[in-house]
Each structure stands twice: as C-alpha cells, then as structure tokens.
Image (tube, rainbow, N blue to C red; front, side):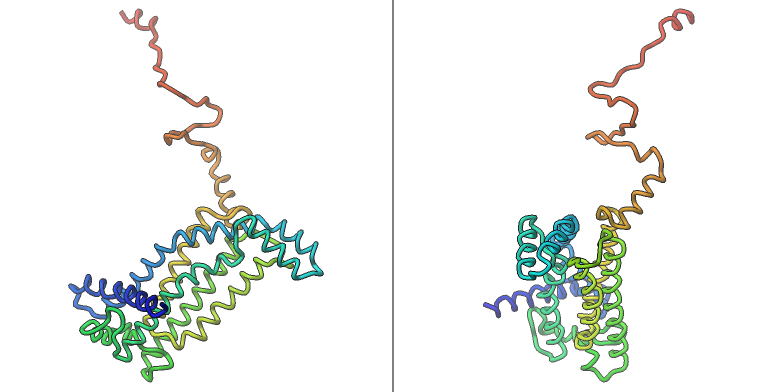
Amino acid sequence: MLDSILNGLYTAVSWVLVTFHDLLAFTNNTDLQWVVGIIALVILIRIILIPLFVKQIKSQRALTALQPHMKVIQKKYKDDRQKQSEEMMKLYKEHKTNPFASCFPILAQAPIFFALFWVLNSISQNQPRGLLKGEYLISAREASFFGAPLSGTFLGSSEFSTKAIAIVLIIFMSATTFTTQRQLMVKGMPKMDSSNNMMLQQQKIMLYLFPIIFAVTGVNFPIGVLIYWSTTNLWTWGQQYYVIKRNPAPGSPAYEELQKKKAAKGPLDEKSTNADGTTIVEGQPEQTGQRVQPKKDKKKKKKNR
C-alpha cells in the first residue's frame, strides 16, 4: 500500500519535471528545462493548496476571536492543566477551528517535498524513478544551477561551487521562512496579551524553530530541493503579503493602517454601491426603477418662438 502511494508520488513529481523539460526543448538549455520544471512544480502545488491556505486564514482569525474565551478558561482552570486542555479542545471543536492550522500548508507539501527529494537523489545514483529514466535520467544528471548539479548536496559534494550554491540557497530558504512568519506576527496578527497566549506562543516557536530546522537539515538537501523550497517560500511570502494588505485581520496593525488610509481619502470612501455596481452617494436617495427624465422648460420654448 505504502509503496503504491510512494510510486504514485514519484510518477506525479517526475511527470511535471519531464513535461516542462519537453515544453522547453526549443531552448536547447538543459539547465533551464529542469530548473523551470521544479519551479512549475511549486506553482502547481501552491495553486492546488489555495483552498487550504484560505482555511488556514479563517482558522487563524477564528482563534483570534476566541482569545477572550480562552483567557476565561485559562483563569478558571489555572491549577488543572488537564482540565484546561480538555476545555480548550471543546472550544476549538465547538467553533470548528484548529490551533495548528498554520502548519497545514507545510504538512500538505511534505509528501511532494520528500518525493522530489528521492527523485533528485536517485539522479545522483543513476537510478530510474518514476518517469525519470533513459534519456531523461541522463539529461537530469547533466543539469545544473549556476554550476551546481541539481542532485548535488552540501555534504555529499566536494565541489566548491556546489557547496557555495547550497549555502546561499540554505540561507535564503531560512531567511524567507523567518521573514514570512515575522510578517504575519508584526502586521497580520491582532495585538494581544503575550502571557498565557497559546496562539502567540505557537507563532513565536514557529518564528525561530522552522528557520533552524531548514538550516540544519538543508545541508542534506539536493540543490533541486533547495530551489523548490526557496521558491515555495517566496510564493508564501507574496501570498501572505497580498492577504495582509488587501484583507487584513480586524484589530491587526495592517487593518489599522488600511482604515487610516481609507479615512485619509475623505468622503469618496463613504460611497457604497448598488447590486449592479453603480455608486450611491450618502445624502442622495437611491434610484430604483426607470431613470427620471429631465422636464423641458415649456415657457422658455414659447419665448423662443
């Protein structure tokens, strides 16, 4: 059963890589064909994960709204940790939210991440996996990123170029993980009391834990995997920036900034719209039905005659 699932993932990952390799055959650039295939894999996966990202945002905002209830439970059962945990879980279940929702996109990508890891790892060992076999396997072995083989790793290579590119990508991967999480905490989260705040503590742990994990484990990742994770971090940062800027959580610094900008624009922001998109200005009656035709001045018409 497990082998069937893994083989299916290997086939899916290698299919994306091979498909973009063929689509870009006209460039006659092997490096570009395989690197673009990895980036395309990121874009495809992240598009599929958009509903999960939306669910993550909703869950985070639901947790924010539950903060007053959580404080009551913490205060009531401060001497009974087990009872406090049980009541918290009841609260989450009742409001259909999850304190670990922010981890969902990373966990959902984990199978693809490991499938890509083994596909690229098999290239260095000249072992066919999924659709990477024959000429594709030979081509993938020759592909590189700024001189570093896509299947090369920091620890597994003696080449300076491979080690240098790996270090740069590891630093970039860890830095983007940190800045993405910090962006959420500084701009996207409502101001709250840090004492006994489970959500805030969880976010602080993620702020420092994930970059450290990536930095430590990254020395074993093939260059292709480092490209994948750096690209997905960029996507996450951009996606989160868009949501924080255009649809910030109520009470967050980004929300307050948005309200200040709207207030600075003046009375034009007080306009609302009809269902058909036409504008209604406050102080004027909403028009319904047929448009009122302007009346002609009959006296003026007679005088002209």
